[in-house]
Image (tube, rainbow, N blue to C red; front, side, top):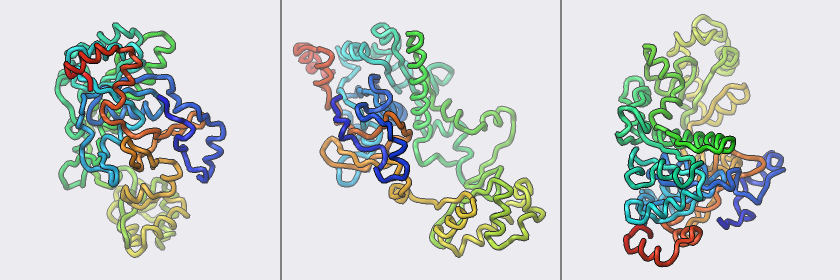
Length: 423
């Protein structure tokens, strides 16, 4: 890629407290710590694109191999003022795109030529799909023996459900996660974000980096199998162990089963979430809310007692919050070392000074010349800073250049176009 790194957005504003000190030794000649790693992105929807997005954010050269004229990125809504979908811009920034229909004659040959130049292939088709197209792990390993292929699927590459399609909400249902989400007396609820997809994408990145480390030591490539179901179960805080041993689990809504008080409390202008995890924090809270007699009173003094007296404990805090603004509540509790935060909208979060100081919103020039505030990388690197360098390419925008890099001649390109394999 020829991105001018000198003009790449800074990882944090220059006036952010201590940002200058953190990045005092930063290099500005590299896009990130994975510079020099090439990744082929053969993905769709969300889990696979998230994985390759993180790798691209970390500086890898990610080539997105997608169907010519791919319309997946047209999912509404558009980012205002851009004419482009949030969907594509969110997970395909920092990538290049080659339009290649792997179902068409000659496409597999081009893909395998790409594989010969790659370190990692990320794919999230149903198990067996790439094999049917002639570009599965065995075919890829034949041209790049030390290749790392990361396959993401709903249920994994083996097991009785391996052949079933998997989507984020159905995975949440299958894992038991959905059964515990929602109000205690309400219906099960899915997460408002693509939780299983996101977790699978992150585990895919971890798997890719671990496999690359192994390859660096031994020269051995391997196939990395990431299941959305496994990823969600791993991130379920031990509930799978409890379920497997017969411990009954219940839905708590915004409350916590083992800490009281902890939950959302209504204020004069919104809600705050308060968590009082320690008995000494409860004693301070009792003073703050004007009920010092409850600091060590029976039913209040210890967390175990407060758990058994949940409704009365919550009522004390709820009554104090009701006539105060969220800002007053948070400021007062902060000053007393008690964890609290206003329940914000994403619009409010986007404007928050801490979010801005951490460069989690980065104004980015998109493929059509418009700009949009894209979500920045989460991990910060003092030596090799990362950034949203480019918006998502249009499908196939880099086809000719990538074919040039592969040395594909004009007659071959003409044949591939005639067979609708490239675009």
